[in-house]
Amino acid sequence: MVKPSDFYSTRLRQLSSEKKRIEQRLFYIYLLRLFAFTLFIVVLVQTIQKNGESWYIVASVGMLALFFVMVRWHGVVIQRKRWVEKKIAVNINEQKFLKFDYVEFSNGEEYKYLAPNLAADFDIFGSSSLFQYINRTVTPEGGEQLATNLCSWSIDSQTITSKQEAIQELAGKPMFLEDFQAQKFSPTHIATNLNNLLDWFNTPIIVTPKVKLLISIYTITFAATLIMVILSILPAITLAFLLIIAMLIVFRFKKHVDNAHAKLGRSTKLYQTYSNLIYSIEHETFKTPHLKDIQDSFKNDDLKASDSISKLFKLLNRFDLRFNMVVNILFNATFLFDLQVLSQLEQWKAKHKPFASSWFDSVSKFDSLQSFARFAYNNNATTAFPTINANTTCIKGEDVGHPLIPIDKRVNNNIDFCGQPKLIVVTGANMAGKSTFLRTLAINLILAHNGAPVCASSFEFFPCNIASSINIHDSLANNESYFYAELKRINRIIEQVSENPKTLVFLDEILRGTNPNDKQLGSIGLVKKLIKLNTFTIIATHDLAIGDLEKEYPNIVTNKCFEVEIEDDKLIFDYKLKEGISKKLNASFLMRKMNIID
Image (cartoon, rainbow, N blue to C red):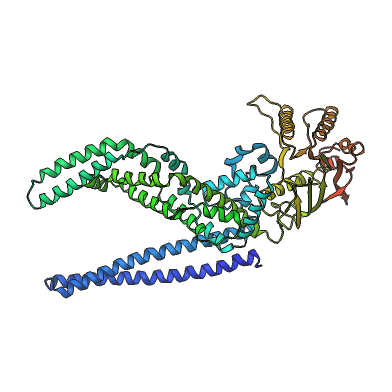
């Protein structure tokens, strides 16, 4: 397989060359357009001087037609140039991601509400977060779907496997991913929300059969009257009378038309982009069932979703002509333009309402999947698709590392944890790697449950939910101390594991807000409670007494540690997981080094 870095470099060379060719073509088109227009002026002058001889008239019309052809061709080539520039931007961004340079991209802060505890404990959202590193979604709804997937997931093995197969297939289509991601919504598109369309779906039909009949009668009457005025059969004042009637009709329905336009107006680019995205999914060849199911969701008898949405954005493009006051008055006066377009939109709604919501939902699901696929493609050399084993309670892995730590700084570890109940006690000095280890395992499990590869050479896991108590904050607004906030969090964990035994619990230095004796008694009491509840728990702690529980529960409690060495008056961390309980301390050493104590 071609290395991702080589692929992006090659694509950038190819696309840059194509852009240069397009720019050259644009220059020649510009010259031809200038030539055609100049020739048109010359021939037009000759036509006037020759008193409108037929040859000169034909020549001037021909030059004018050539000019308009050049203008249209110029527009097409400009669109092609913009498309190539978008694809160049995609590849440049991916080169940045390979270097872990992604802080300028969306970090998903707005999605923290989905799972505030999980998000805070494992850096799901925010600067340098998992979301920011993985997110390649091109639609706002896709971004929300990705955020939701990172916060909650199915623990059904078949569902996880189907997603895994889909992501593997998409990861093998880097050119398709490039095309799909090049269609990313611009900031102006994002301001338009699909909820406006869904809200409009629930509004009543305004252009009833009676109103349609009224439109037809008026349009026919106006056309007939106009012909009779031209033929001097009727006086011109008759048209003025009809215009007054038109304005009264339009005014009668103005509130409903304005409401529809407020929800749908200026949205043509939004739906055009959706049409293009769906078209690309419809016309790609997929083999895995999950992707084929998404593809099939865009089909309804002989209708294609991309064609249907394309028709919608054309109608909305026409609807936006209301913003032009002259066109608005002229068209409404002649054939009740507002009601005509509203009628066509309501016909579209009646025909597609049952399917449209599912179309956009399928786009968001696909958008999330292709985001994971890009992560899989970029990290194919350092990741592996995990094995799902629902029949055991085991987490095993070789060379397991944190995907957000650059490769040259990443330290990987092997793990082999099995059993239920199970208590893994991780001890170690400050900064030795305990908390990072907890985050490493949790992040990889979140990826695994979403069908994505994990940062390991091999990985096996059992489908589970995750509960944690790591980052606790007091709350002045709720008059809660740190200790009370932590107790509330622990109480929720107890409730969760009681209701769902398939829950993996992560604890990091719990009960820090009380005195050492209470902390030890409370911590030991809690882990014993979790063992009694048949829970799989991983706890990072400085409290060595918790590690002594291995004597009381020899087949349940396992001690692991991260050690630190002092060499030449320097702390040496290897961040490697070892057996046993850590006995080495470094707090006083660091305090002396920083002249805090003597």
